[in-house]
Image 1 (cartoon, one colour):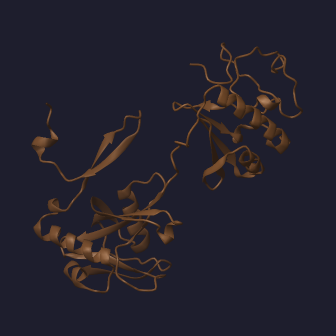
Image 2 (image 1 turned 45 degrees about the vertical axis):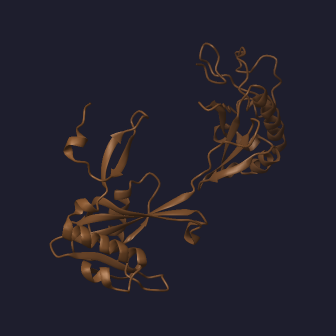
Image 3 (image 1 turned 135 degrees about the vertical axis):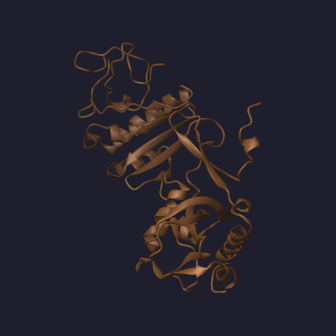
Length: 317
């Protein structure tokens, strides 16, 4: 199916003035690249905005596509946007996503006057939305959680586990090394990275042990927080403490950690869980990981669950 702004022969239209933002009916293009019948506004004839349609009936407009953003006056943009919104509603679109680079932030106030609201912001851009259909907006909210990951690194040969004390805490309690997962980073990779950055210990992800959910987290800008603790296996043992983040770090006997009061409640609980697995078998506590192909071509996802018996894993019918 032809996208907005394309002729039947596949040549791109070069929109003008208030037609910059609009997915209009296909029209003939003059040799100069201008639309016949349109009056060109100075500096706007080749701005090149092309709204992209999504499968949900919405449109996405990226102001980064503007060829000469410095020549587009806010008042001209306001008229363009106002006319475009009117047409988009007529054509039955349900919503608009407006992506604004930080250096073009002067257009945000203009968009807000037309009913756009912030959806989210990144380091170099902001995304605004406008619900065009009737009723309340059904657009999804932006990220509501941050993900923290810790690694419980257990040396099964000695029964000792790696613990740290944070430098910037009011109470120096023992805990497992860890930190926030980065965008696009797998849970296990976060645990490996954070353990190494804080302690210098190299480790391998083995399983998930627990997930904590907490709302209105003060350290997460009021968002909810997911804190995941992984069981890790060490491949090195010499501690190289990160002086900026950690006050102390040591290999502590797991049974001692499970009993001490000098720790956090979650660390104490997981230490007892880990001790149970260490003594009775990790299969009783582990949530192992398997990777599967996604329904989206070329993508994969990781599924964490208790290990299935072989006769259940290999069922064919």
